[in-house]
Length: 100
Image (cartoon, rainbow, N blue to C red; front, side, top):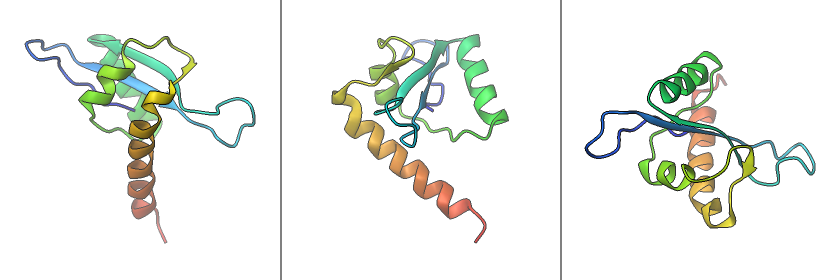
């Protein structure tokens, strides 16, 4: 999930959430944009992510690329690399935090 970030010159937070379930055949061949918003909606997205233990990161460039996309759509191929880097970092961080 991309953490809320204010646009330059704006104090409104922004957020987007991605879902990726590669274990579900033919469902999610790529990450899917499942939520996005500004202001109170962005704050609610972040609040729900925290409540459900969803990893949160801040990436203003990726967030800007996700904002024009339609909800409930797979991300386009031109975002695969950026999202893969994000998912790999979150995977490593979660693995390091897991009890051994």
